[in-house]
Image 1 (cartoon, rainbow, N blue to C red):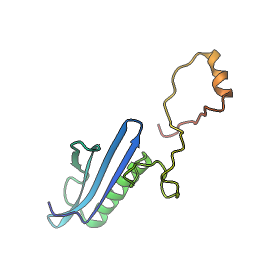
Image 2 (tube, one colour):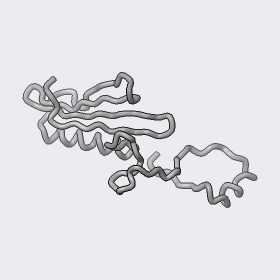
Image 3 (cartoon, rainbow, N blue to C red):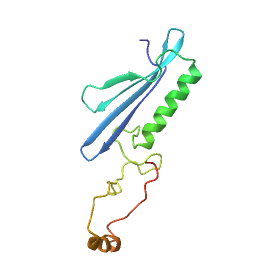
Length: 127
């Protein structure tokens, strides 16, 4: 495959998770293909193509941009340290707030969590 015309490497790090995601646009057979690779940092990456056949450059660019947007929404960042803040000037800071799925509790425990300033609740709208 010919060298990439455009590529990006994104990182995600939280807790024990340390992942990398790479995406590229390559010329092929008079068109362009979008390729990707992902996995745990330092290990063998799984690879694939987002375009099964060569497409025009504008289509490849749209596929590439959509792919990068999907990954950044999930918390991937271009910085190798995988910091959660993007384009804020606070990339090296960690808020200390980590989301987790709810665990079942007894009804008598509910008030203690609602009144405790250490806990916060946010409704999930994206499934």
